Image (cartoon, rainbow, N blue to C red; front, top):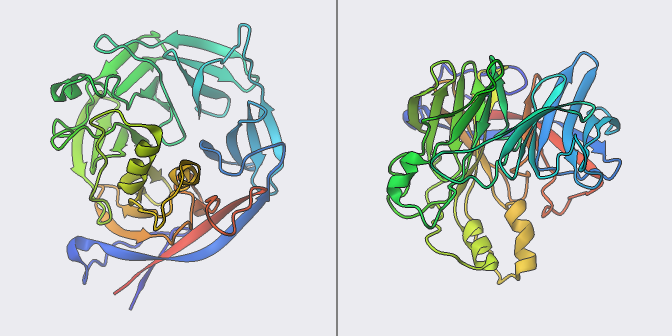
Length: 380
């Protein structure tokens, strides 16, 4: 007998018999597919995509790299419902922007190089902007995406800083100086750095690169490194790390190490051939987490740098772990080759949407957004 897990309805976790440590292999069933015509030079696989559900309809919020502004895209037909104009000169200039985060119904957070954070309204007007510095390291940039966005929790904005600023020059002991989270208090305007670090054993076997995704559940932020199994839980009330948990996929065993400078082609081959984790996403409707991952891939034939580049963005293989609210692994699913774009997915009230716009798939269509709602079943 099989117990069906409907992402669009509910989760049933009671039965764990017949599986080791309660972990199941998840089989995906296709429930619905959404195909939208791309308009106004919008690319169909933007790196930052937000899904908005409202009384007036559902929308995608994304940066348009051609027009260099922000679009609200109607999720029913792909039309551009509205645009947020961005200036690159003058008092409202966002020149140097390194990421946009939808903060609420009327404001957008921006991070910059040189390091700064700003808030703008939907007219593109800067409400305020503050420089960000770190007393221990010279920051060069602050990068945010939809999987490590600026988060508004209570009266604070929390920002990510996942990168080692001196990767080759720093020692292993410096890991416990490289703080990963800062906050800005709306009342005082004060910037604070918090004692959130990668694990002290992060470089035990060599210099793994640094990056993470994060998401919020209640008062806590869940920080999931790209190159480590551990998930760090940060309490935004106490401003402290309250737990760390190993959340290991059975498919992720071989992380990349960057112990020396190599050329771009070698770096791309190394990145492609090694395992890594993708976004961690909290599903507030079903109180579960999805942690995506991409196993390493070795091409059968020798490929040129230009042929390798699309594989670096639209990875051949990817999968997802389903975690309960305590980060226990319910099960895992490995997608077919080139089945999804492992950098674009989001949760809505109806379920989990996966982008089918992997540009290496034979059916890839640069003129349409394609998303799929999914259903999984647990094997005996």
